Structure formats: C-alpha cells, structure tokens
Length: 563
Figure 1 (tube, one colour):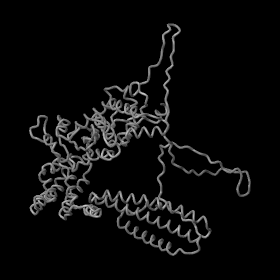
Figure 2: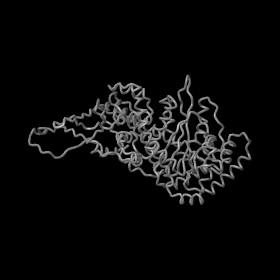
Figure 3: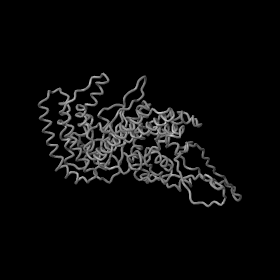
Figure 4: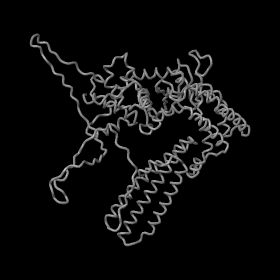
C-alpha cells in the first residue's frame, strides 16, 4: 500500500501482529463511519472519507494475508493441493479490494471538494517499480511560464525540471511493405539487369513473417480460432478470409517441420523422459470424436543437466497402446508417466530396442489419497446438493507421509544426480520404508472394495516404479513437467472447441511442440517464430540448429531499425 510495505518483516508472527493492528484501525474507521451524522454536506464528506479509509485498511489486510500465505508456502512448502487455490483466491480478493479502495478514494475527493471543513483523504499507494529502461521514451515539453506569477517580472531562470512518466500503448498498426526492384538495361549489350527477388516465407506469399507469427501464436499459443481472428482483423480495417488465413497456417507448418524434427531428435536423445496425454475433440461426420495429444518432455533442470528442455507432441485418433509404442519404438531409458496400460509393452523385459524403465508419479498417487481427505471439496458438494465423497482421516495421514518425501525433494532440487541420490538414500529411504509398512498395515483393516484400499493398491502394485527415484538421482518424484506442457491445451479446449480433422491435429502437434519448447527456454514464442520465419527460407540446412529456441538470440534493435 505505501513505501513501508517494502520494508515489511519476513517473519510470519510479525506480519500477524501488523495484521491485528490494521484490523484495529479498520474497526476504528468503521466506528467513525457509524457516528458520522453531522450536517449533510460535512457528514457526506466525512462518511466518504471514512469509507475510503475502511477500503484502504481492508486492502492492506488482504495484502498482509497474501504475504503470510506466501511466506508459509516458502517456509514449509505446499501442504496440500488447496494451497494454489487459496493463493489464487487471496490474489483475486486483493485485486477487488484494491479497485474498491481507489474508487472510494476518488469518491472521497469529490465529496471533500464540496465543503471546506473536511480535508480530502489521500490514499497511500504501493510504491511502483520504475518503467523498464528498454522502453522508448517520448518527451512532451509543457511550456513554462513567461512571467513570474508573483510579481509579473520577465527575468526568469530555469532551475530544473520535474518529469512525470506515463505508460502508454500504441494500437496495432498495419502496413504494406512494397519491395521495389529497379530494372536497368546495358547501353553496350542491351542486357537487362535486376536485383533478385527477396526470399519470402511462403512461395508467392503475401503475408510478412511478423503477421504469420502472430496468426500462428494466436491460434496455437493463445487458443484463438482463425474465425475469431478474421473477425478482429476485419474490425481493424483489414479483411482477411478464413480460408486465406488457413492457407498460411498450413504452409507455415510445412516450412517449420524441419525444426520440429530437430526438437524431436533432441527430446528422444534423452535418457529420461516425462510422458502424458490429453483428450482433443476432433470433428467427424455428424459427430465429434475424441482424439489424443501425446507429449514427451525432456527436462534435466531438476538434476542440473546441461541439455536444454524441450517437448515434442504427437496426435492420434484414439488412445490405443500402439501409439506410444510407435513414438518410443527405438528409445530406451527411464519413462516417467502415469499408470496407463498402453505403456505396458514398453516396460516388457527383453524388448528388442532395449529396456524402458518405469518411474511412477508420486503426485498421481498422492492425488488419490488427497481426494479422500479433502474436507473442503466434500463440503462444497454437499452445499450444492450433490453427494459428497466420504472423507477418511487415514487418507490425510497418507497425504502427510507423502508430503514429507516431497519436502526433501524441494531441498535437493538442482543438485547433481549423485548428490540427489545420496540425500535420498539417507533421508527419503526410511520414509518410503515406513510408508510401505503403513500401507500394508492399513490395507489389512479395510475391505477389498473400500475407496482407500483402491488408492493403496494403486501404489503397492507398482511399488518398484515408485521407488526407482531412490536409486537414480535423475528421476523426479512427479510427472509435473509433462502436465505443465499439456496445461495450455486443457485451457484452450474451451476456446477452439475441436480440431477440424486428423491433419489439423497433426499440425497442432507440430506447432505445440515449437511453442511449448520456446516457453520452456524462456523465449517469447511469437518473437522467435517471426525471426525464424524471416530467416528460414535462406538459412543453410546444415546450420538449422542455430534457429532452435535454446540457440536463438533475438535480433538487436539496430538490425530491426535498419530493416
């Protein structure tokens, strides 16, 4: 709220004390609001001022609550899957209270302006960080006075200047670039000379690389279907038909396919992969089928591996096990995935291409217990009139035991495989042994069809895959890397409804591979696509790896201005 917020203590108890003090001030402000009953004009101004104070205090309370929640998360780690939801709710509450506080402050200023007896309430705002230095600055000079306002003298000398910066955005501008190639004729031999035509992304194409990159990123990165893009462009004065945009998407997918192959080879060269899949509706004759998008992620950051992260997507019309077998037919290593039966043939001993070792996902196993211990979700279902799932205290104990193992993993994140394995042998192994004994003991007390028994059996039947992380420092405890790669597709399904065909699903897999890999390497996907599309036509094929996201460097501003 004010500059003092930056100096807030990082101690939870101190923040709690500040929270209590702020609540006391808020109660006092509310009391002031209740007793404001003097003459009408002054009373309205005082009431508006008190209301603004209350709003300010409430926003500060929300801010302190959010600080406490974040500090607890940093200190103790996420205690349950509800933590993310709680933080989201606190941030949304803070957003609404901040907006209300500003609105009430303005109302208090207006009310105070109508009377001379009440001073306007000035809200203490949070300190804003300065605008980034790389943004261009436009100086607008406000002319100074020509004469002294006090005596009317004209002998003025400049003492300095005050600068007030305002962040502004320039609306999107469209332009047509005309490449003019002059023709010359030789007066000696009458031969005609002309510079060669510039390379274009697509043969006989009409769209520039930046426009193509925007269309691709809007469709596959921001989940805006082409028909919605066409409507927006038409409102901006540039009518582009749906079929015209679709032509460009298909051509760009073909142009970028060599980069997809490079990323695919990089991912499948890893010795450990994350694998997962998700549904994707596909338009069929008179109905909508359910296709699948598969993803395999290479992410060596947890054990400080030097290889850059990447993700490769594949599309299929169904979820038969033959698809992952085709994707990983020649691959060997450790596969971290859920318990999908289609991976079974990959794990069979004596596989011709070599062994694929299964590594279980503890997050999946924990989720099964958490659903049986989630009191809040059961209460919400009951409030909506739905039948809630039973809540079991034993399930909560399983969650706490698994959380203790996750806490150790957070401490060794980023260490070398050898260091991670050493810590796991001394700290994680005893917890895993105790967990297994507790699972066996608890299962004996339950009936075969009990929900908790099913969750326990899920782990015990795959115990070697769940304990593989103890003997290999490269193995992660969860398959979250693959789930993060699929998150955008899950969010986008509501926007684009379905893929138009199997070919559309395959194009989507190519584009998702490029965009998600760029994001994993902290690269702006749209800027990367624009630069790649501008260069790929004349780029030597043997140097194509220079255009991969982890090797790419954004063009310098001087080159952009020269262009």
